[in-house]
Length: 314
Image 1: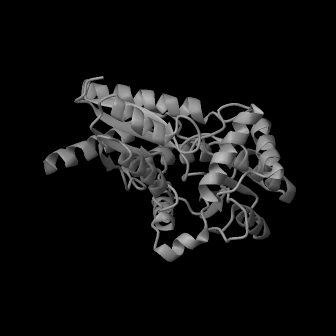
Image 2: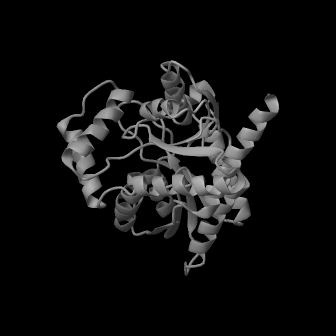
Image 3: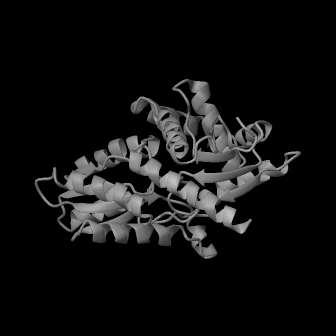
């Protein structure tokens, strides 16, 4: 790679890379050390292991690798040999810290970081970017970083979800209530005036308008448990309340996520489906963006836009 190349670091949450017990344990261990500074209990490990095995493992790695490769190809078309795309994970290899070091060793002196999470929060996107900054401070010759922000209502992001929602609605024989879902976070973020909930609600409202939805709501899913409160309304409660109101069909649109992984394949396709069956409700969901060309085009536009804005400052 030429030393003049600009680095692009694409970051995802991570996953157990295989169904091997040690791979699952190490992934859970890294998460709990990061958030709680504790080791996994046997019960926590068994619970995660059962979830992974019930869905045959997570496709996050293969999907993220396809996104990174497609982004490299797309950037090369407009900026030949100008960018070099790297992929890193927050909680599993290749770790963000290792990738930042590798980028510096490869001669990268300027880089753009993108967290694959559509809604900003101190506990989500800023967590990725903080790891980049901290790792960068350990370098003998630090990289000059810039960070992509604010794409929760980007036209291509909304188009990605509009097409998926309308495509799934056309397959329904009744009009379902659409539930936009997002990953729950500890409720304490609301004390910080964190943008997470507002960005989620803005995107849901924009999509409801684009899709001309008459029946829709929002819900949070996949909370981390424990004793502290998490953002709500919780998906299980929303499904129960809708059924009590007489609703019989619902469509899940998990717009807080970009890829198929455990929170989609288990929390929605297994757990939520089991609840829906129990309460007599028909539940479907949209397809995920994954490596859709529109998502790749949006990421390319974000990177190019950040590059041009930084160039204008010099």
